Length: 228
Image (cartoon, rainbow, N blue to C red; front, side, top):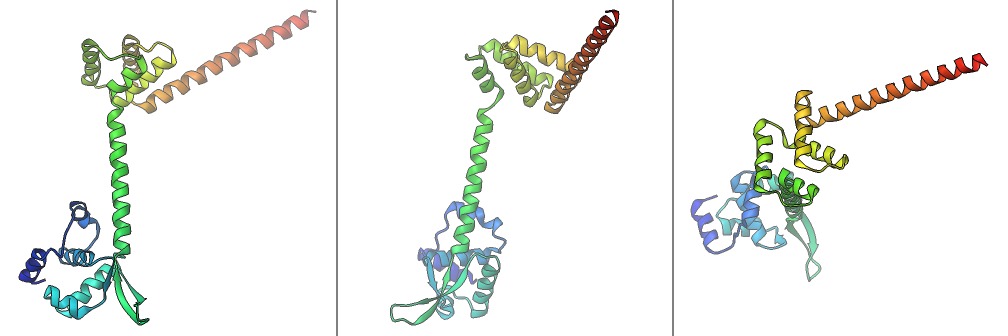
């Protein structure tokens, strides 16, 4: 694009680029000139007459450059060429930006979902989880205790597991949570997976003990029956 032509187009207010569209530019897989051409088309409305000569006169671009931009935009599914009947029943070609708007919508929805998830994650920090589970606002001393956990190296994931364990045991207090973390630390438990593995090992051990007791009980019954 010729600099003066582009500058003049901007001055005339033909091209308006909202900040969210500009931020999308790297994801469109087109060069900057092609992006500016796309914004020019957007400024013309939902249906743009496929008038190469008219576009050329407005932008100061030769026909080959315009066709190259149109081909690039089509190959990236950002625009399409449609044949529409005008008021007189004559078929005319128009450029539509449906593909671009669809992609823009998906990007905005995706970004919005990520931001919502991020907010949810932030709102579920250790302090918020603790206050919810113990049913009261943390005191300055309790906040310092939680900070000490993090400084000691306990991950947020591990602290949340300890909180769940305390709640499950019906002892939702910082003292008990601290005891759980200390015990896990001595046992080398540092992740959520370690916690789950430890619980599984404990359950398996309990099952084995129960099984041994049942076998012993059955054995005693057999001996008693033999005596009769």
